[in-house]
Length: 208
Image (tube, rainbow, N blue to C red):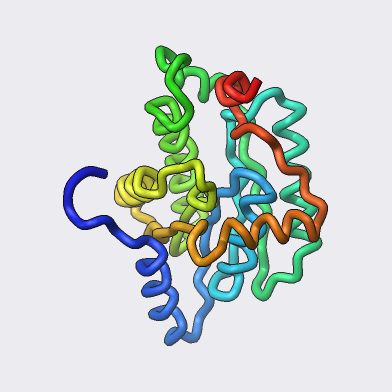
């Protein structure tokens, strides 16, 4: 985002949660989860307010063995964590060719550049579609918990995608309020596997 006053997505999120406190029903939220460590704090935080459909859709992750292990870790976490409201795991389709199609021509982009924007868009579009199909009131993503990811870009994509699919997007910057620090604590508590690259072959290449 360029120009204008920088938005505080954490305060926007807190404003939505304050409004929900006055309602008697518990809304359903589809949460796009990128991995168990990033999801740990977000699940702990949001389960106070929502019944959560936890959607693992990350066709960028390679190789497939890595993808399956991250998926297993997320399933384990949702079973072991004491969560206030129900969390239902949703297994997304592993479709790496779709990611490679979106990244074509951007293979040499730096981490955090145009290729990542395409990847965020791909995953958030699928999350919004899933949320609409399941008639969830909101959807959001764990991606903003990472200090390495631009929350402005992720929230902008989320809002644009939500408008197309007719689902409310829950703004976030989960790294704020020590969210990232708490995710590290929970990762240690539950013995979660913490990968050293985002997921795709390009990010792995930059780490080696």
